[in-house]
Picture 1 (cartoon, rainbow, N blue to C red):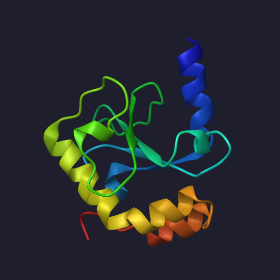
Picture 2: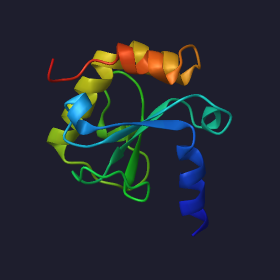
Picture 3: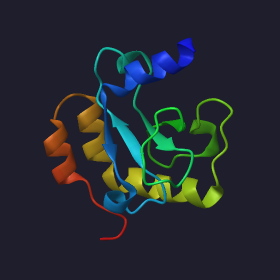
Picture 4: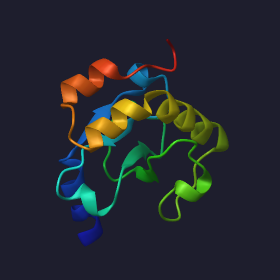
Length: 120
């Protein structure tokens, strides 16, 4: 139960991006660099399912960098190869905005304005 509480605490410094906005097959959480997340380094969380609803207990953490691979998935979670490919494309497309957000250089609303959908 303690791990679930830790996950919820971390989500207070994360913003959710719906799959309809990102063009991804899953919803994601993007992280600002707040005090909790700085110990982890830049990362995103993706939903482990394709539901339209967000569920903090159904997330997979991924180190946020360009050209994400399975080695960047944190823990033992498995991601469908086609989902990982789409996440890689999305992060590559939006890396500068996501990193600026993590570094607290831009606000949530500024980040959202900068993000590009894979559907654009």
